[in-house]
Image (cartoon, rainbow, N blue to C red; front, side, top):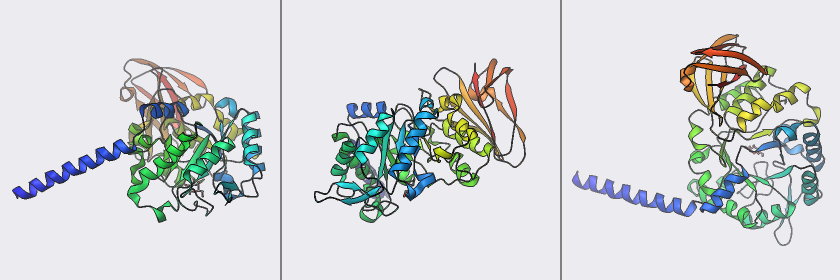
Length: 395
Ligand code: GLA
């Protein structure tokens, strides 16, 4: 018995030592951490090709997206990154430098074009030999790939685990991601580093320590209510891991892709902004309705996502399908989302003491863009099925 206790204690000591050493090896220097915070002080915003175009992406598709963002008000609303997802890769040249495939005749020229619009350029790879769509990955070419991205003027890399599972052990994942972070840093170009490994190995615990600016917390989203709501409403509890420079990423937006109704897209947009999620529009911007554009660009909703305090929302009440979430904001006000996951309109309330507000408060409806007046103790609103009432409450 005595001996058992002794060996448990020495095992615990050895495990602690191993953990401390591993953390010391994987953590960033203070300067690197500060630079990391600067490049994603608030959650990155932009557009990504995957949700709508998947492998039908091309130079023309990406230029058209940049044209739209620069001229339709999205750029003013904060959407800056124009990101190519999977399926751009061609072969490596004789020196091992990655080349784009025939759909992207000149990556440097494409980067220049995006930059000429005052926007930034994003790209995608995998630490494995192949990407999820079976294109060339960065395995054993990390330094060269980072250099090539810098040559092309890349400002954002989404790095997707995919086939890395075939060549690495699960516990190597932190060093694998750190390797690409360091390769990017060595180029001297600030590049947002977006980890995509679907929440594997509780990435929120270590993503920031290896230089990740964001990390996917879930499997892929699809354009339907069940997928979006299951992902969005499951984020409660992760709020302690997000902050300036490092964000939880519940995946890209499906707003405007057509398979959810207007209230469902309002829920999607509101929830993602409350969650301080990266906002990467994933629709065809050249065929967007005015309603979709308005959903994506409401400045008062985006202000919640881009709030400088960087506090991710959490749930304060849940009664069956009715949920109330709140996010504290830099100016001392609080955002509140009253969400109805049920099938009929319902009156939903927030107890103001639950957001730390005693006495009289003022309430503004952020989708109606209307001041609702003063309230004391409780605020209630009728919320349509699958919809949301989003308010900002000032003490
Ligand atoms: C994975 C990612 C998606 C997308 C595809 C591309 O599924 O999670 O976001 O990048 O790969 O193949």
